[in-house]
Amino acid sequence: MTNSERKKRIGAAARVTALASSVMDLHVRIALQEMDKEKRRLISGLIFIATGGILMLFALLGSELILGYWLRDFFEIDNKSTISILVFINLALAGVSLRIGGYLAKGPYLPETLEGIAKTTKAVLGKN
Image (cartoon, rainbow, N blue to C red; front, side, top):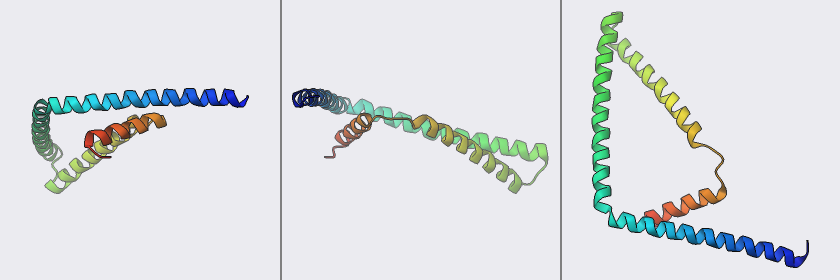
């Protein structure tokens, strides 16, 4: 490969990189404009999501109480044993969920993808 062919390849790679960077910058600018324009809707949505999450937590707590009473009455065990069983069930489910989530979240990310995610996150959070 001659020197001029190498320069052409490097020049083409630089143009593609510049194009990708330009598209990413445009995407970030549009996302920031959307966030600024739709702030009220986004905040309302987040409030409703948080409210739903809190209510779901209360429902989980109620179902755990009902399950605890059922376990205590069905197996005729004391409160300490019932709570221990519920804690073990919760830990097992949490471990399975974290394992599955970790498996789904990991993956071969391209360096460009990681860089784009970092750049977008920094731009959305307003960091340099």
